[in-house]
Image (cartoon, rainbow, N blue to C red; front, side, top):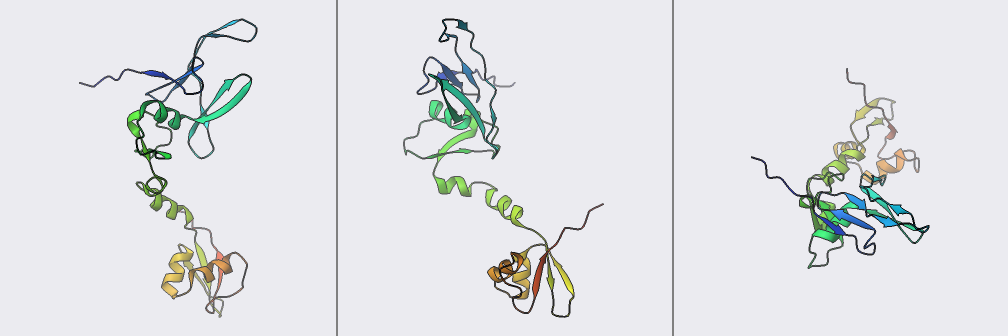
Length: 183
């Protein structure tokens, strides 16, 4: 059968008595009285995207708001960090999965090189180009890197042409291309 995990809540450092974070990656406010003396019921808070895929939450104290990354709150509350590592890694590479079992403290280098990040980053930078010969023939390449490798050209020279800093490199000019539509 399935192992049922129980949600455990701990106070958020610096916001004790106001907010808690769970081992399941959720944040809640606690029952409290507001500045006018009215009772406020605590609730699980909705987080938002940071723009880079990480989940963040707004925490209020004394009229000031602090935005915190949910994965860091979970790690600080539930994971030991004896080596004083500065970053938190998502083991499954899903920035929205903030369950404590998916997180680990790590170094900057480890986090940057983890999993398929390097491969995904390189693929995102691939952009097709046309190499234009002196006679005007256009040759399609999947990326500037591939073109420079196959033609034996300096990659930065190809890049300089594509960004308009120079007109020619190695007897060729270069243009950005749009990938042909796939039916």
